Image (cartoon, rainbow, N blue to C red):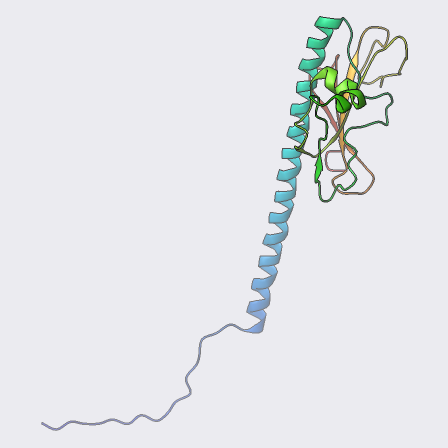
Length: 190
């Protein structure tokens, strides 16, 4: 039996690959998907932070009603509409701790409203919002926001949480008062 050898001429072989245009299309698609994912992540984290603030305001409601049952008045943590706790200096890093430890006499003296109310975080817990609570005090009247307190001559309180996540000077505000059933959220997306 004879073996036969066949010699083929060398042919141009087409190598499969991607063109520059195809690669650019893939990069654009990945960029669009990343933009959508980042936006969704920001909305998710913002909603989680807002829910944290709403939970804190709910805790303030419970503590205010308990305080009222004991002392027949509500308690304030602030003396004006511009005084918040804690004072968050860096809204980007969000690394501010609550900073009040009501077991320490110095903190009880420095923050009598928060310690009397018993609401808040542990001293080392990180917070995403600044808070204030104002209540009716006949000795030192404060004018409440009329949209949240209808009768300022009766005992009342209102609490406010605020944050500036975009660092643009416009705050996301959440209000809750003795007359509101649900929190009111303003400028959620700033």
